[in-house]
Amino acid sequence: MKQERISDFLSNQTIIPILPNRYSYFLSKKRNYSHWFMLTPILLSKQVIDVNVLKHAFSYLLQYHDSLRINVHFLNNELIQTIEPFKKSFYSTCNLYLYKKDCGLSFKNYVEDKIQLEKQNISFPDKLLKFLVFHNVDNEITVLAFLFHHILADGYSFKILMEDLFDIYEQILQNKAVALSNKRTSYKKFCEHSINFFKKNLKEESAYWKKMPWSTTHRLSFDYQNDISSNIEGNTVSSISSINLDSIDNFMDNFKGEGSYGLVKILLIAIAKAYKCHFNSNTMLINYVYNGRFCSDESLHLDRTVGWFSEGAPIFIPTKDSLKSLINTVEAQIDKLYYNNSSYGYLKYIFQELKDDFFPPEISINYTPPWLGESKYKNFMVPTSEFNSHLSPPANTQRVYLLNAKAYFSEKTFILSWNYSRTLFDKSKMDKFSSNCLVELKNIMNELYKSF
Image (cartoon, rainbow, N blue to C red):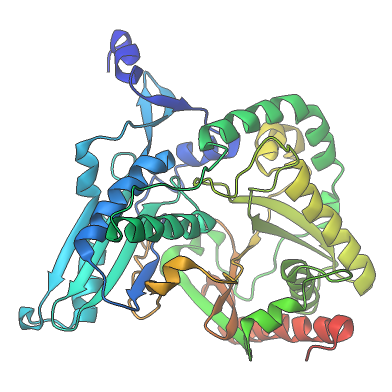
């Protein structure tokens, strides 16, 4: 695009500043803008759904949540993030599939095949969103698959989107004028605030990260003496452990109220204790992926804002300390991240100064809290794992971490899943490590709450 046409190109679009850590994502060759860096939640109907009304409701959703219309452009070697104005062409982002059993496939296989096909069509930066509605004509069951690239939204945003979608759906069914609660703070305003915060606090934040105990951390030891270049997606295997629960609500009650601690803090300590036994290390350095909506600025209200807020930052845990000391250490670091906006993004600025003494975390954890309480959309549809929506990245894609964990709830089960390369780590040992993490979690909860 010629220089003189850039202003014309941007004249009807809203420019959003790109956060430093997002900027590094866009330029990362490791991720290569792949369509597989996506979220693909799937919902199953609890009642008969008017699929045409649902499609209509989705168009309102696109108009209201402008972050769903984000696009990224390279103009004259400059990276620019914009929000596209709503137009009729956006209707093509919603596809309706009517299934009949005489098509030769089961409904499950039909849905999975179409999802995989649509996923292949998702590409950076032009096609980042697809809303797929599958209706089984024979039994009136409806499946909804929401395919979106992570740069548009995070997991918490999905809950907001589904609440709003079915709020709109219900209003249309009742012939009411469509109206949604005010989201108060736009994603654009959040990004502008964050950029200013980065610039204003860079010196203080640099000092904070430099004083962290980098020298106490050590690189992971491998079970097999293979080159680290074998840490690729094609070699990835999983070790999964779980705790069966009587009730998710009752389990989460342990972490509420005065004198209690959040589950993720206790989980991090439990992992650190298992880590010490397995890797014989006195300090665990772990990348903690957290909800970036916390903000000390009272002018920002992000509870109704859709966007990519999730963040990752290093947490240092001295594994041999007492439980009380560990709780204080972890709590101080997490509170710093939540309420002072300290971000892994700052390390991008000061990496050159730290490179001789610092290496990034080699393990990571992403904790997804349960959706507690009543949700209106669950009267219509509920999340389901019945359909496989997974699309693996190319086998030769380099993994970002040596060990990465996901902690989440499924029905009445708390699950901890570790991914790693089978060429570097022995699966039987990793199965034991994963199991010990939850054994330590139970031990800590017994000590604190007498829960198990």
